[in-house]
Image 1 (cartoon, rainbow, N blue to C red):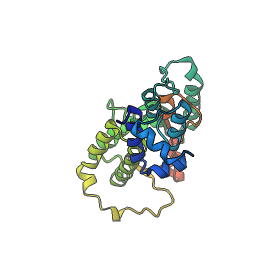
Image 2: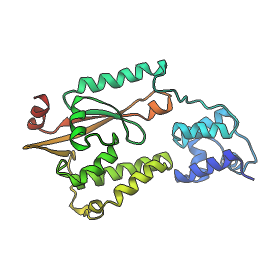
Image 3: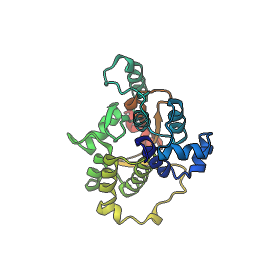
Image 4: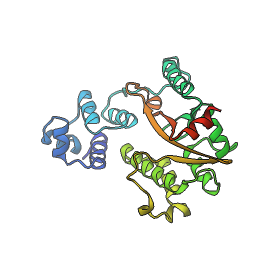
Length: 253
């Protein structure tokens, strides 16, 4: 009878579309031993769980779950936001956002909630969702009925593609799936002709209309490479850069 760890291992192998042979080669182990782990005929060592977690590119929460299922303590911490150990991380986020001003920059968590932002981003957010949700997907949906984003259809479709990719990488996420479902079900998204989107552009910007101004911005996304804390490790910093002098001048003013 498969163990809890064996069931988790098999589920993630299928999510990553690995055969047992594929995964055994990736993890540098025998396919026979892998089969025994999945069926519950063998128990993994702690190092084997970590090796398989790396081969399967498990998100940190899933790696912790696999360790627990195999009878080991989790290795990735989940600290409170104000934990002293995270002060360098929080300072790094603040520094990046402050230095990026006057251009918009913000940090978001796994579920696209805005956890930090600079002045440029706060101005755009205030126009998009005054007093509303501090969640990028909710803000994007709220903007569907406004004239703020000139190319809303294009931005929404590309955002939906990004959402679906993240869900696959995470092996599923109920919150993200619900967001993707809401966005995919939006009337404007359903009517988009994918053939009308020019994917051959070097950069596909988000184009804002603010009064008489037409602002064209593209994003660069950064993540921490060595932070082990679960929440901080999933934080993304998105910096928006101007596509033209007109946009740059607007934010500098």
